[in-house]
Length: 102
Image (cartoon, rainbow, N blue to C red):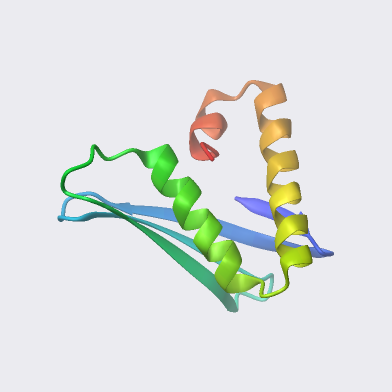
C-alpha cells in the first residue's frame, strides 16, 4: 500500500506471524528509494484472541512513531493514511477495505 505524505510516496507493508506463539503483526514503512524507514510490531498475548485489525493499528502506530520523530510530521502522515482509507471505503472495494483495516 502507498501513502503520499510530506511530498513523498511511502510504501507500507503488513506481515502477520500467526503460526508461532505469541502471534505477531509487523508493519514496515519504506521511502521511495526503497530505503528502510521504520518498523512497528504488535505482540498478541497468549491470553488474548488474535485480531488482525487491532494488530495492524498498533503496529502501524509504532512504525509511524519510529519513522517520524517530529510530532507534526506524524500527524501529517496519519492524516494522509486516513484520507487514503476514506478513498478506499468510498470506492467499495472489500479486499482493499480488509487490507486497510486500521
